[in-house]
Every structure is written in C-alpha cells, then in structure tokens.
Length: 287
Image (tube, rainbow, N blue to C red; front, side):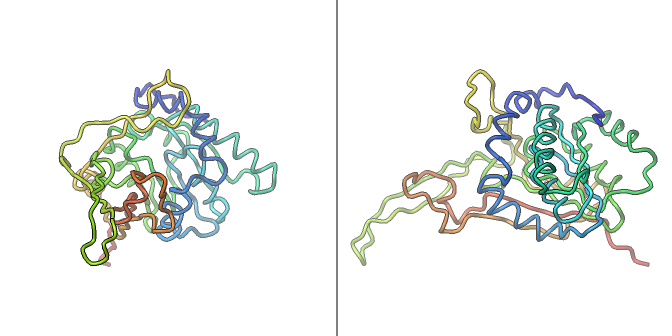
C-alpha cells in the first residue's frame, strides 16, 4: 500500500538513482553495511521472533529483509517511490528463492520529513492499537532536511518497551566536510619513511548541505544532498519528543580493510569512526 507520494525536492536524486543504488547494494550490501552497520544493528536492535518492525528509509530493503529473517514482521518505507519499488522487486526475488517466508514485508511510500505523509501512513493503518516493537532508520538521517516530524512520529508509533535505532555517517568526522591529510615523515629511530593520517576540521556547528559522492553512471542527475547536524541538533528533537538515548556506538573499519593502493581512502583513517549508531527508548517509569 502506497500512502503518499511526496514532492520533496531532496528525494528527486534518489528517484533518479534508485536502480543504480539497488545494483550497488545488491542482496547483501556493501562493506559499510556488512562490516559496520549490520553488526551494530544486531547489537542495538536485538530483534525477536514476532516483533513488529517499521523500517524507515529502507533503500533497497537491506535492513527490512534482515529483520524479516530474524522473525519480525516488517513495514518497510522510503520517501522515494522508485526506491520502494526496487526494494519490493528484490524482496519478491527473495521470496521466490526461498530466502524469506512470503508476506513478511510490506512496502509503503513515506516521506519522514512531511507531516501529511505521516498522517496518511497512520490513517492507513487504522487506530493505533498495536504499535511497533522496533523502528529502524539505517543510514538515512543525514539524507533528510528535517528530523522534527520523524522524532514526533517515532514516539507516537513506538511500543512502550520498543526501541528506535538509527545509524548515520558520523557528524564529526564525516558530514562536517573534514579534509583528509597525509603527512610524510622519516622515523629518526628506524630511518623508515612513515605516513601519518589526520583530519583537518574547519567547521562543525554550521555546515551547509553538500552533494554526496556520485554512485551512478548517469552524469545528468545530481547526487543526493547530505545534511550535516552537530550532535546537539541530531539528538534534541528526540529528547523533545520524550525519548531518551540508552546506547551510542561509533563504528570504524579496522586495519584489515586498508586500501594501500588508495592512500586517501576513508577506510585507511582508522582512528576516526565513519558510522554513528544510537538507540532511543521511552524513559523508564518510576512506578
């Protein structure tokens, strides 16, 4: 069921690049997903059989299918109609290959920045008598321009003992636009030449939206925008909505992922985490 087709201009690049994104992610995702995102999702979400899950910004459905494999029933949503269709097609293939029980995942279009889109989503599900045990948003928060509606409706749709888990590019070391720097020096003890890697951070509190690296061969369509938020702006809407944070993780590649032929590659900077993950819940009752 498609509840709402948004006119949000930030979604237009995702519409244009949906097929390329699906091809890039495939069935199992890239190394960011397999090495950084999925392990921390397993740790913070801890899905149980019979959980009811809402996956926001589902992309090509990676997290939705993982949740379904763990036994959850999943409503998978994305603001991009084209992205939602790619996820539906790939999931249908999983059903046909027996990788998932049929009908474990339903797909809907939902723009998490748009209150009217949320209202239609809520209305389409009838009176909220059974909420979601799990709400996930993997690598999506930095792609949206406004997280206030997201925080409000996460609070509304979450079960009392539920958990909201999100991952995103690290605000300090990634979306801030920090420059990567390589310094060459000779070690006075060994006489060997060494490379020291560091980041040059010129701004953090006020960083304008920036185009992401193009992941499509279509030069006629602009890449999506990335929206930077310092940590206080990232968490404040959820705190205002009445949620508390009870887990925070910073994820990075280890030395085994180094790329010696690409010294500038982000994964070579192993002292600076690439992914930030956090979990929000209701405050425990005092009763």
